Amino acid sequence: MIFLMLLGYSPASLSAEFSLGIIPQFDSRKIEEAWAPIAREIELKTGHRIILRGTPTIPDFETRLYKGEFDFAYMNPYHFVQAQKSQRYTALLRDQAEPLQGIIVVRNDNPIKRLEELHGKKIAMPAPNAFGASLIPRAEFARKFKITPEISYVKSHASVYRSVIAGTVDAGGGIESTLEAETPAIKNQLRILYKTVALPTHPIAAHSRVPAAISKQFQEVMLAYAETPEGRAQLSKVPIMKIGTAVTGEYKVVEKMRLDEFFVQ
Image (cartoon, rainbow, N blue to C red):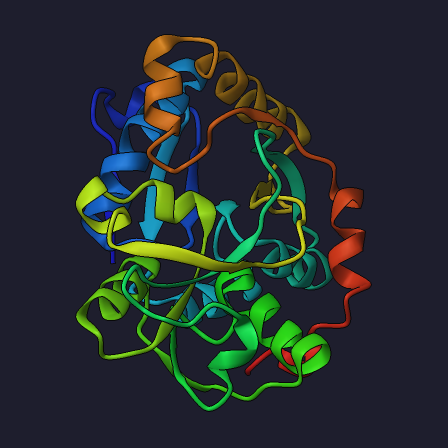
């Protein structure tokens, strides 16, 4: 678990303390590299201590999120729908560059050309409830394509891509932004076989206990940071390519998809 108390202030100089939970799409080192400077910027500009909290797996993140343990959190759209119901999280920000789409990738030398050919084949996914990388693809496998692959869960998007390259599975589920964040050595060995329906991207949200003025500060600092070259470069590591305000109502479309039957408790 990441537990990062950002330095630069003495306790007396900080007016409050807030936690920032991050969905573990990548390993802890990469998450800390992406988010620690962002959290430091929020701390510097608001005067509030920001504690960056990571979890080892997506299921661990879900457990803590649904208990309301994070003051602020970066989560997938399905997580947000559930957290909004149970803990009254409010969406603040999201990537506006492109919609969220799940992808199914295969190795470049894999002869499979159509998704239907994956019936009965081995597919790696990060976790059962990883939104674009697992939840949406599994729903489309069942409802649209009527196929039943053999799915294994390997904890992160990075592990999915490496499992496909290693040949231990026939295909893997991810999202375009995490594939783009990989090195050319990884990306160049993979081919996108299929893209899912497009949906609103991962929101950064605030728990209902966070004062509205603090949430507004957080939002404004992030938007201003994105206007600087340093901020754009740092947010691209999340990856967030064009940050903008998010509205809780945008995620009603996710609620209407009736994904509960594919959610694994």
